[in-house]
Length: 497
Image 1 (cartoon, helix red, strand yellow):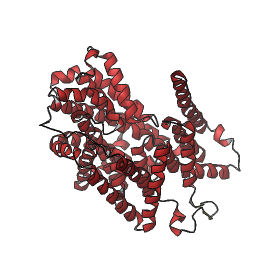
Image 2: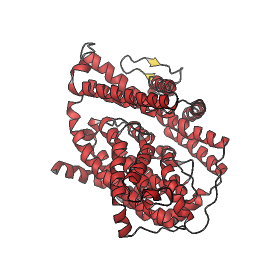
Image 3: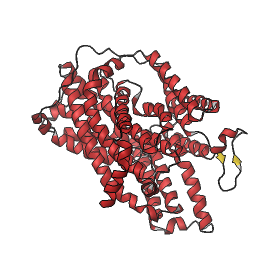
């Protein structure tokens, strides 16, 4: 306990400094605005902000990204409630009762419940994150190359959870990502691999421009094809916070949704959309008034919004402790660490504890800032909902191109972003998985380096990966994680047929 308190004290100067507080509060504000704009969302805003973190201490950069993610979870409820337009898949359940409340003239009440229950879920999940992640970090000294290989393999197994259409296309996407991770200098032989004579690629394909191209530019192209049309928000929608009596009536839905958000967040590949749908169904199942769901139930708003916010901290647990990014926002945050030369995983706790404990403090601060900014920024967010899409898309392209250039002050990175924007657009149109490709790209180098280093240390003996208890356990879990979702998907499709 004394050591934990010392590490919190060491991280406090970063996060609780005027600069740290300003970054967290600003991140929450940008997150709320991003969540409120249909088609933007947390991942895209985090991708655009990523280049600005390069000059920061990793603890501050990670905290800024986490604050954006936290704020966006509340922001996405604004268009879901006011214009029946879910800004993200996780907000779909919120529209069912949130928009019904809006039509009844209770928009402020729906927004207030979304804010307060989201705060409860987010804060509770941070506490659970600290309880779960800190003991995992104590394993740092027993992790060697076989264990790191098994951990990365476990992360890659999440590809099967990302299957939305063709299983084969998801696997091909992952292989594409693994192939990209091999570009650059071979650390073991010193030879250049697939660099095409471009010196800039000797250090590997630039991760940030790839992310910005694959996700941001391809999203712009998709939205440019079919510009989003929606009704403008009319009238006043001021926050109306829930009373103590209303909160007491919502405690069951809030409690079970918090638990669901944390558990689903820890599961690689599941994400906030799964958590919100499961929470909504469970809240309806345990409700005393299930017949009100879909007609303006306060529980119907509280459940998905609580789960949305609880997912954030739950999602971070495997990324911090095991270097397994279970969602796109986590992948962006992991990229921020890698760009700064910091490797997530067990050794992060012993080498850079100020980053982990600083993130804990930032998440707590972000949840409190979300409540305060919920009052102040909501009128702006409502106006942002109505921004004309062409102006919005032009702004995104400008930010992406500028961010790609400032990554290393190289036009090569701009071309990389543009090329991968085209690739990402093609993948989206043909049903390939961007998430699977990105997951494999981030984890590919860890898999290769750990595998080759382990074989070098143990004279090429492959059995070392199966005889060490931790690596064997993780490899078995990886097989289960990979196979079970595929079997469930096959079973679901057979029932449909």
